Length: 55
Image (cartoon, rainbow, N blue to C red; front, side):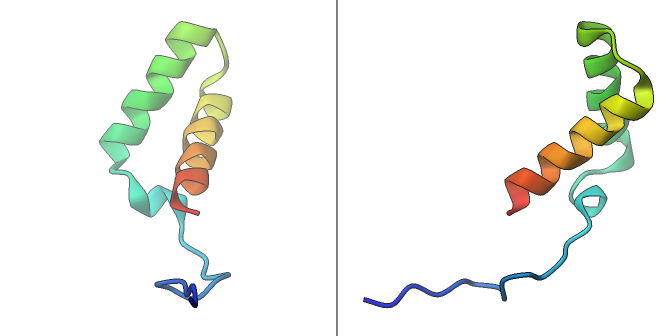
């Protein structure tokens, strides 16, 4: 049996394109509230999580 990827490996997808701006803001605000971190860090957490899930 051969296993193939649906899309070529190494194809870069902008993780921010996977989420609407409103959802990204909402998730980041939730992280700030629940974990007491700065907003830029919370936004990075959301973007990196989206990238991980997309991989």
